Each structure stands twice: as C-alpha cells, then as structure tokens.
Amino acid sequence: MSKLKSLVVATALVCTSFSASAGIVTLMGDDVTFTFEDSTLYGNGTVVGNSIFFAPTNFQAESLNGEGTVTEDQTLNVRVQVKDESTYTITEVVLAEQGDYLLNGAGTSVDASARLQVTSNTTTCGFFACTDSEIDNVTGLGTTGALTEWQAFADIDLAETAGWVFDTDVNANIQNNLSATTTQAATSAMIEKKFGAIGIEVTVVPVPAAVWLFMSALGLLGSLRMRRTG
Image 1 (cartoon, helix red, strand yellow):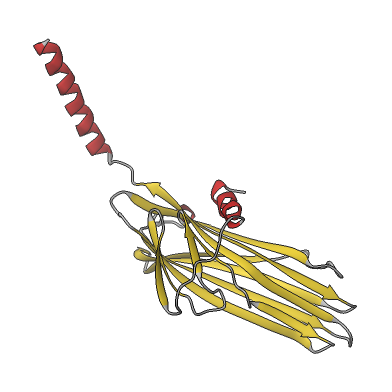
Image 2 (image 1 turned 180 degrees about the vertical axis):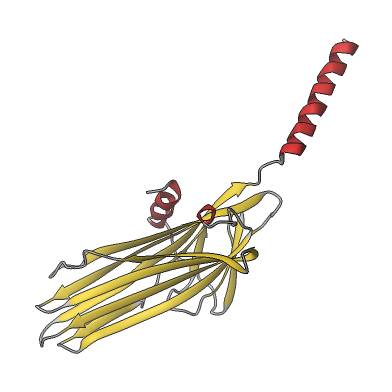
C-alpha cells in the first residue's frame, strides 16, 4: 500500500463529517481546492490536508425474499485545483472506499465496484485531454450470517500516462456500483457504502536547471567578494 493510500485510510478513522447546504461546494485543502455537487448519495464532504472524505448514509442495495437483483449506482465528479501553480503540482490521485454487507440464506449474493477516472483540465495527450482510469471489482463478498466489511482502492499516477507527468487542475470522477441478489423466499442480501475518500499527492515544483545554475553562480560570486574584502 502506498504512503498516500495509507494516509487516506488512517485519516478516515478520525474523520468527522462536514455539514454544508446542497449545491455546488468548494472546500479548501492545504494546497488544493475541491469543488463538487453535494446533493448526491455521497453526501457532504470533509477535507483533511489534501484529501476529501465522504460518509454516505443511504448508499445501499438491498434485495429481499427472492426479488432478484437490486442495484444502486452513483457518480461523483470532484474538480481539484492547485492553489499556487507556481509552487505545487498534482502527481497522483488515490481513491479509498469502505462499506459493509450482510447475507442471510441460500442463493444470496452481493457485488461492489469502484471506478476512478482522472482527466486534465489543462493538458492534452495527443488530440484529447490527458486521462486515465482504474476499476476495482471487489472480491471475497461471500460471508453469510454476519455483517462484514469490504474495501476498494484505485490509484492513478499521472506519470504513467505518456505526455502527462503532472497537472494543476483535474477532474476526479468516482463511480460506484452496488448490487444485491436473492433467489428464494425468507432470504435477504444487503450491501452499502459507508466511506469514500480522494487523496491528492502534491509535489513541489522543481526549480529549473538554468535558474538553479544562475543562483549557484550568484552564491559563488558573493563568496569570492567576501574573500576579497576580507
């Protein structure tokens, strides 16, 4: 697990929800801003450092008594912008999600998937805006008779897309699909999402080589002058 992913998960344990009125919301992180629509199933957002967290309260799929497959899906777009483009850049975006499920009876099942897509608002790769995506289809959802947790992760490293490397303004789109299935009477299947987070890796803009050499030369000249006057 990457350091950024570990930080996102660890901070989630102490995170509390931020209350805001429905509509377009912009929240401030340490080095970036997050703009999103908070009237979706994801609910309100909380910003800690350069990560934004969501704690849905009604994002679930439930099937009862052999009614077949019930699905619930939702998409959320979060615009992430660097506050100071001369100082910082975005190099990586991580999605971490958690939830739980409960299966009772034979012929029951649940499924969950998480998709992260990051698209540039500033840079093109060829003819189109630079973009990359990753999907995590959650496995191991077979425990019956007990409430059980599930997790999903996705990680987009901008440098893995040719011609991208870093950015200062991107759209991070997350999509979740939940499904619950029952095939017989007196059975139940439920799966829900309890937590989702987008973590941003921010890197200091490197000083261009020419500027570094110029500053080094000035330092050397200053040192020589001090020796002469001394």
